[in-house]
Each structure stands twice: as C-alpha cells, then as structure tokens.
Image (cartoon, rainbow, N blue to C red; front, side, top):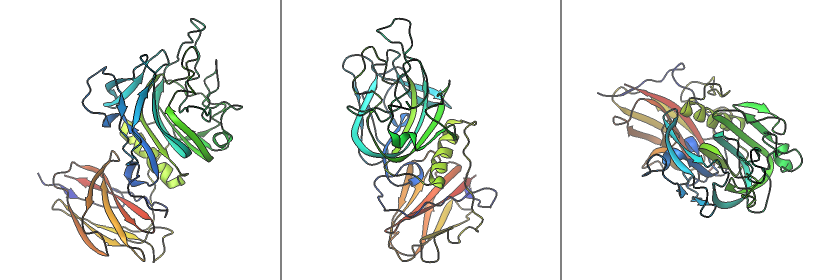
Length: 353
C-alpha cells in the first residue's frame, strides 16, 4: 500500500534549531548538533534477556563507546521489553555496575531516562545508601548525590557549582536538584549546567564501589550528553522525543509550534539564513526545496521518530529540489534537517498511509 504525505498546521509542528558551529558527525536525537555521547539501550544488539553487557555503542557519531568496568563483580544486564516495549540496561543491586567512557571536561547538557533502585551498604547490613550517582568520574565529584540517607539529585555542598546553579528538570519540570528526590518508577531527568562539568563514568564515583554503593543501581534506557547548553527549543525537542519514545505521559514537554506557514523562513533566521520547504505528496515521494541562503549546503538528513538518522540525501550542495522515496517507510513523524556551513534548521513532517 502506498504511503502519502499530508502536511497541515494541525498535523505537523516545526522545530527551529539555533545557528551554531556545524559538526555533522556528532549529532543527537533528530540532528541536534554537539552531542558527544548518546547511549540508547535499543541500539545494543545480539543479546538475550539477562545477558551481560560489556560494551554500549555511542550513537552520537563521536565514537565514545561505553565499556563496562568494575572487575569481576557487578555485570550490567540487558533486559528487553521493560519501558514502552523497549529494552534497558539493568545495573546490579550491589552497586558495583558501571560503564566507563572518554573523559569529558566540557559537559553542558544531559538527559537521562532511568529507574533507580536503592542500593545496600555492605559496611552496614540492612542500611540503604542511596548515593548512586547519575554520572561519575575517576577523580572528580561534579555529579555528587546527596547521601548517605537522602535521595536528592545533587549534594548542595559536594556537587559542582555549575550543576547547582544550572537548570535541573524532573519529568520536564524545573526543580531544585539539591532538594528534590528522584522518586519511584522510570523518570526523565535533564540538566543544563551553568558552565563546564566533568564525567567519565556511568556512574561510579571515583572507584568508591566497595561498601559505599556509589555506582548505579536500577535501569537506564537512554543517556544523552551535549558539550554545549542547548537552547530552550532544543531542550524541549529532545525532552519531547524521549517522552514520546518511552510513553512518559507525565513529562512536561510539548511540541514547539511556529506561527509561520510551511516553507517560509524560520523565526529569527532572516532572509539570508537557511530555509527548508516540504512539499505535500500523495505518491510516497517527499519533495524538499532547499534554500541555504548565503551558506553552502552540507547535507539534507532524514531522521525517524526514534531520533536516529534514516538517510542523507545525495546532491544537496546548492539551492534546488530533492526527492526522497518514502514508500518503504512506516507512518509516523519524521524530521528533515538542513545542514549548512553556517548552521542548521529542522522541520518535522508526518507520513501517513
């Protein structure tokens, strides 16, 4: 059966990305630039239920593959069909499971989808020590949790000041992370810091594994890290992507709409900035009109509703018309991202049968 493209103000929303230094090899969900680590449990392949996870591929394109640490104890496990039909990586209840990745000293924006279990402190049998960090490091304590008997996201005295002065959101709502507990069940947490912070582990704290319970416990479905502070629009875009993907209906993220008509210049771009128009089609072929403005076009990329890139259209070097055969694609929301030397913009469109 052929698939047709219908685009109306009620069936699509347009998302505009701020102009930024272009790096087409390091993009997060739906093409937002400057993603340096993107761990998605759904991208772990070849494992059955309960299998040990040794490596976790990085989907950002930055090559920061996460490798399991912790010696012979505490293997994280692959658990399918846990959250909206999607898998998670489950960390052991003894708080000895963690992954290491390339040391990052310029972290500015982070998103987590996770569920935490309360670890037990081996030094005090029966006493819970919920100091498992959301991110950790080999020698820095920037993401220090409040513990040993509280559940707040950040320690008001030990966490990096750039985290404490940044913006923490729990399920899309701004909170004081030094006074807010993570809570039960799967949660969506985001952080935009006030300056650079450091991490290299998910989520061991400086090797304090034995007796302190400072490695992760529970489930992690997705982790996304950027080395710049995302704009409000971009933060909402990633948050909405995660909300929809994992059916976290309580998360306070909504699509960002523009008052301009489809095909007109994005807000704030002016007439010299890049533009992207999408032509409705009823044949399964989507037609894009690219207008790079004063910058040379680098690529026109198509992303699926899960945030992963489906295609890069060839020949997108100058102004003109490009066609994408979407006949083999399922119905749903897609994103077209026009990348130029000066920056990028994105538009979402809906493909229906």
